Length: 242
Image (cartoon, rainbow, N blue to C red; front, top):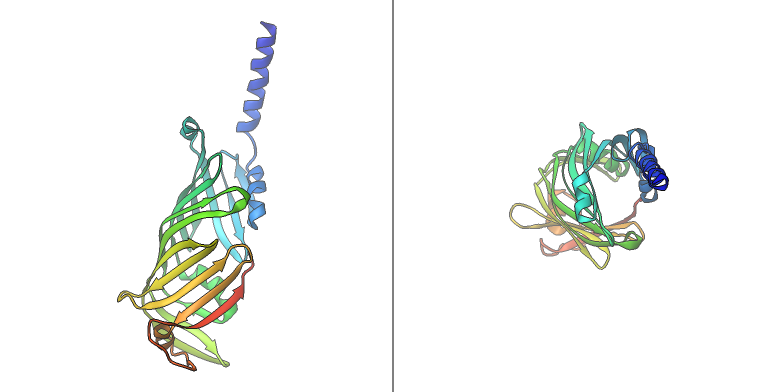
């Protein structure tokens, strides 16, 4: 009987330690993705922290563990981000062989411009991201990705040959997908005209942005050999800081 009491007491101590585990431990799990959690508060089960991704201050992330997920042998967290420029809600579910992330978000242009300004570009119009479903397998390999990204369109400013230009670009409807371990975002306008395609090499972090002839004309960008409006006439590649 004494051994049973000792076992129960030991289990209780371990349970208390786990439940009270500080939120900063949570930061150890995301550091491998190049994401930093600062000013962590609470515990790994219910807490918050400031999220710093490469080149972007994402905002304050809040997480809450869903205890009922244990009934299906999974670990699931509800997530939300508190940032005037980003409103995000989602879940992350850890299963034996993979992890699933589902979310929807509204992104203000100020957050996007914090990245684009490095390339002399400033846009207007917010983004609406819906029905994002991402599955990551062992070795942090992306197994599947779906979702939509809609942009309101609007005034865009950029510099070309040391001259500032201002144009009005159409609203865009984008589809997220995965092909040969590359993340794809293909966008068209409301009339189904091709606008652009972004292809991200997951392993190398190189992004290839292909612009259609139609978009180049809308942006008043010169082209050497005009082609059909729906064809991609210009591709630019950039190494991202991932």
